[in-house]
Image (cartoon, rainbow, N blue to C red; front, side):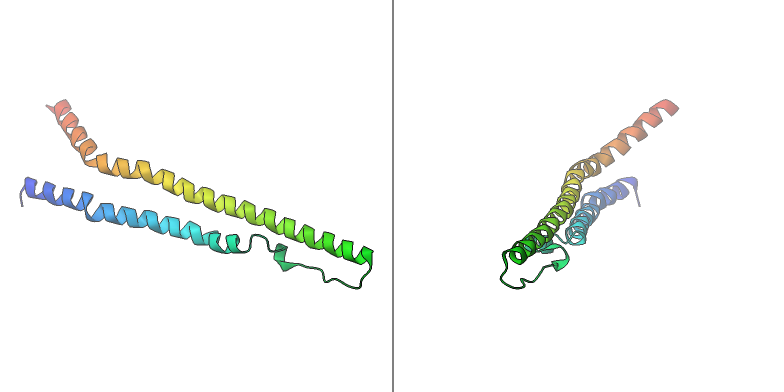
Length: 127
């Protein structure tokens, strides 16, 4: 097997199968963070009280009504804040993965040229 055939096979693998696997790896990372942070569930339950803690309304007294209303509002606000924090972290991780994918794909595309130029420069130093 000659060097030109080996080089052609390497370039075929590098820009074919390996590039597809790199894209699949990126997709897997995005899928992982999407479900690790339960983004769909957090969006569905955004206004659900914290740990579904709710007070039942007892009696018709004004004091009972307002104390139950305050307790339920606090549980709802705490749940909303915690879900928004987790949602923000999850979306940040998704964004970081998308932003990191761009330079990784660029570096992967330029890697054969970098390797070739380093080999030529090294041979130039030897001879």
